[in-house]
Length: 102
Image 1 (cartoon, rainbow, N blue to C red):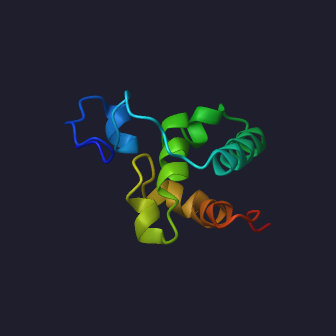
Image 2: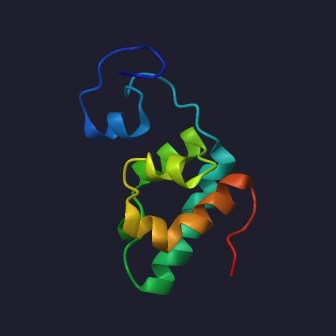
Image 3: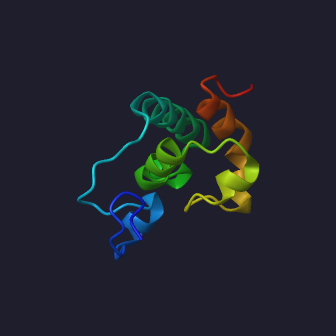
């Protein structure tokens, strides 16, 4: 169900952000920008396309839900144990407003 209007969600991308495509996004734009910049850096270091690190849908879900703990981060679609191990600390630092640890 859409967390904004209560309509049943049909698309995977809608379920990922827990809102229908017709409802306005309420994500933190500054956080989304930090996430995209960080993702580009990670992709460059790993020599992979950015979407291999995380999709835009997953970054949007993070920017909308602003997880502050590991369990909340694992609840974001697109984040499983492997990506949590690789990127969890960085993501939580970015959500808190800081830079990832070196």
